[in-house]
Image (tube, rainbow, N blue to C red; front, top):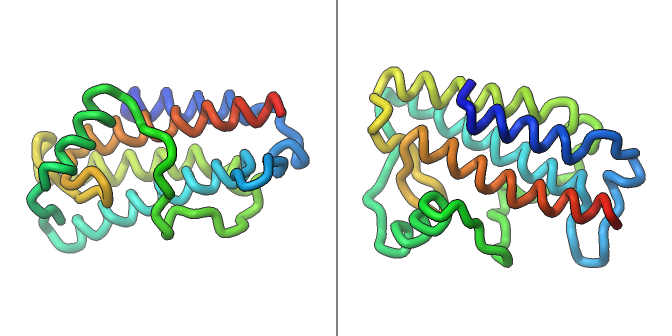
Length: 166
């Protein structure tokens, strides 16, 4: 597995280690709980794996030309490793009520599955090829997708750690 995604798995596991069901589900008014943050991450990994699966089925990358706005966002997120706060998550990545315990058990598997799908696409189309559009950052290579998920995941790990402190 890619070292960035190994780190991501470890950081998530560390952030939720020892949390009770009550702690997983507690949240301040108007904010997500740790369980909801985990489910959001879980849905992003599942969605990315599905996107890469569609590439393999289609036999070609699924990308469009990047806009200047996407390039700027990519520079901030991937170049500076910074994910700005305040952006609403895309609808398909918003928590749906899956149990926190289930997500906690399966999230590492989803990261590994996503990494495998990215690696298969890189093997077929090349590691330097843009493979799949991100809804906000535009077309990304497999390595850029991994970096995005690390930056995004660490952003949310900080949220989980703040929730731990209650």
